[in-house]
Image (cartoon, rainbow, N blue to C red; front, side, top):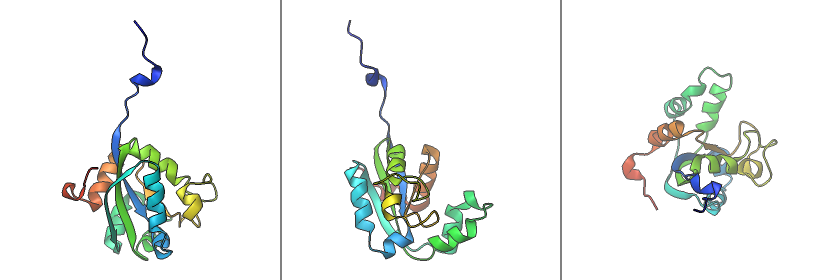
Length: 152
């Protein structure tokens, strides 16, 4: 009997993750550039919409950071202009999108990542992405119902 290669036992996980293109990127008309990078990585966009977050929505979404010193400035920033929220789907979508996003601080991000290319500083870092499967489910449900998602 032939042994299977080590990679044969590794199951790929098709996941969904939330992406937010933040107000500064929308204001600079760079939505398409971000989405092009997403699609070039092989992730599929299964839902997307532009919206203007109000204070209640932003505070609810970022509630996990409520006690942090940056919470109020984050809410103010995220309500300063329209955002584009999307659901991305694919094998290991969470890890793949986080790698594409790069480090939170654009100055620390690797070349070619979204935050390096489009972010201006640690607070205006171009994009948000879910950090774990449970977070992704909660974040996706915050903006989209199941009927909004169109698998491809």
